[in-house]
Image (tube, rainbow, N blue to C red; front, side, top):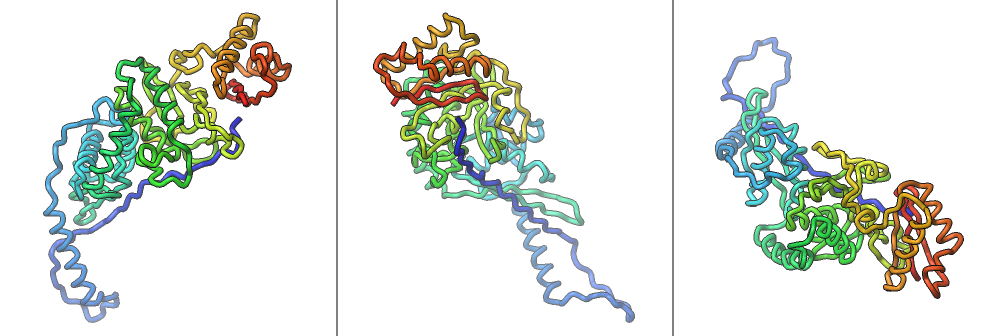
Length: 402
């Protein structure tokens, strides 16, 4: 079922480290006659002094670290950090939101900055105007005195404001009619709308942010995951972006909370053309990766994030369970119910219908009965040809009507 899969290389955050050693004022000293060391040219000494003076001026020009009011309380990655790291997170995010060029941080340790920045990106999928960051450590005698943070922006504040207005108009359409919906309906509808409205394209512009989704209508996994997080947040659903590896390549998906329970969602893998772009003439929504457990997700996804992840075990809001398309037996009652589900989809003119089973053996039995033995014709009058796909890993078979 998962063939000809394409992978996108996730753009890594660029972190530049500048070490500027601020020495004290230079004092002259006479060299002994028998000195055999290397004497630096006068021009180099003058240049070093000038550089140190400039760095001192830059350091002195920096404002003291700000006490920033948090806007991220309750966000998943933010809550995973220590109080000290949350303070740095808030300062970094405040700089990004206000499009500051450089700010002073309440730390002199740069080792966790990339992790904290990744937490910000995981919590806030809508940060389309910032791509990466650099930080500068100002040192004296090997000891860091001040550290600054400087985001790398891909557009001006004016361009950002204009783009945000365009995105807002599209977002209104995505969340339309969902204000009073259940948590499950919100997640399912956004999942479906993203797949239906946005194509998977490795060459899409701005494919690492939500511009590619809401404006370009073409994206890759990072764009899908960022848009899912952004839209879920708009609807009051806790959601975070998870990055890592999936079947050998870098990938991005989501973790969200519905009715108090955590589930995994992979919008990218819900796009049928992502799996088999050349063979699938028609794009349709696959629900295999809508609200699934940790056990199911980690069969082919390996998270690599800077925060701990919960163990997702609930099936209550799984698509197949919720839609009554999940079966734990193949007795006469189950067979009749499965046949009715297939008939209903066929009569309504659906392009496909998916059914999930409790284990691989049941999935194989269903495929044998309905497809190999062609009992599907008992429920779909006039159906002469049918296509199907099976996923024995997820215990799902999909009937595709011509």
